[in-house]
Amino acid sequence: MPVSVAAVDKARILQAIAAHGHGPRLGKPVEAAPREVSCQRVARKVPPQRPGEKSGLTELPVKKSMKLVILDRDGVINEDSTEFIKAPEDWVPIPGSLDAIARLNRAGFRVVVATNQSGIRRRLLDIGTLNRIHEVMHRQLAGVGGHVEAIFICPCHPKDDCSCFKPNPGMLLDIAARLRVSLESVPYIGDKLSDVEAARAAGARPILVKTGVGEKTLEENPDLGAVGVFENLAEVADSLIADHA
Ligand SMILES: [Mg+2]
Image (spheres, rainbow, N blue to C red):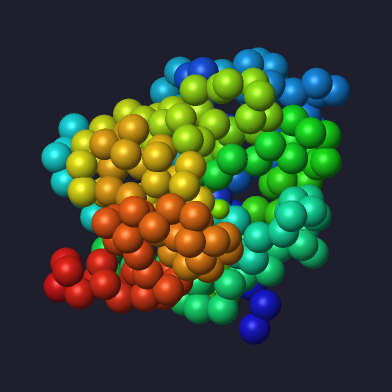
């Protein structure tokens, strides 16, 4: 049965644009991207949090461990495309990925997404379209009983040398700061070398999946066999759940 937008709103959709200290948005689309987008420019478009307004991300004392999983998006949750995911209809989940997130949720894991979205800087899509893409993801996820707590985005171009653009660790460090958690042993699951490098730089636990470009990444970097390598997100989820049983 289709899940209504209201139900998705109830699930407290969060989307945070990474970098430069601005807060997450709760259940509302971010304004359309300005003509030229960088982290700073997008940041200035996001209204500051009002005093006393809850961020939506639960603030906790710093914890050394938390049942937290951070996911790359393209090639991990949804099928990637060399043409970029630039419209809601382009977003197609990898078989089993949404159920995997739901299983993680039921096992008590908080799930957060950290994703490079340079298509914004390349002017292939704007923030409003990205929000609509994520509404599709949230809705389909809710349909199987799962949810992601927040989506952190870096909209920059690789040439911008943004501290948040993977392989730089900015988004992961931002998640750690907002959740007040050490990333030690927190998995960051991706399909590219830049995901592994970002995880290592942030002090998180890199995990590579073979979906997306994961197989190619492994062929080109056979030493990555030393990090956890799994067929897909479903297999990672089963392993993490078993480890924490
Ligand atoms: Mg990816």
